[in-house]
Length: 183
Image 1 (cartoon, helix red, strand yellow):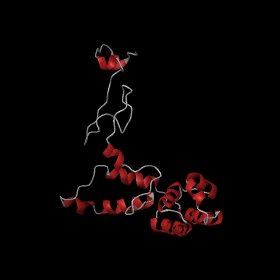
Image 2: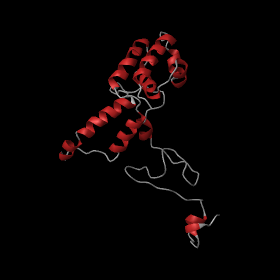
Image 3: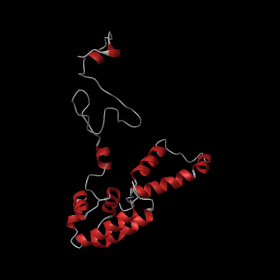
Image 4: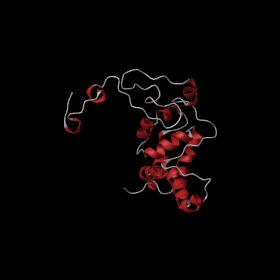
């Protein structure tokens, strides 16, 4: 065991042995031992409740009908509109703005590569007629692939869209490139 700096002379079992050490976080509910089925410091897996397992969507599972995927630029636009109304919203005690709101807005702005979300959606929306899903459109908008091959690599499910040709995808990517902000 290395004993340098601030731990010098300290003699408690947590610093001398990593065995049996646990980190616990308790915000809400019973999520106090790491994460969902994650290993904790002692190497044992924590049990995951069946309710939690049933409520989480699986990868590749379809999204519910009332959910709409948004590109980063669309999220930035919506959050900016909310921030513009923040003074008025803060006067209403029934409205609670999460403390993570500013970080979310900052992330959406920094990762969004377009200034006109309606134009981005319009440039890619005609792909829906060729079987491209809303979530696939969002991935394309967020990733900004330069070529059809890159788009197929980023979104492998596009390969299964028989009516979607390389030429159609190239045209959509060309329209998208025209909308991109200069770096």
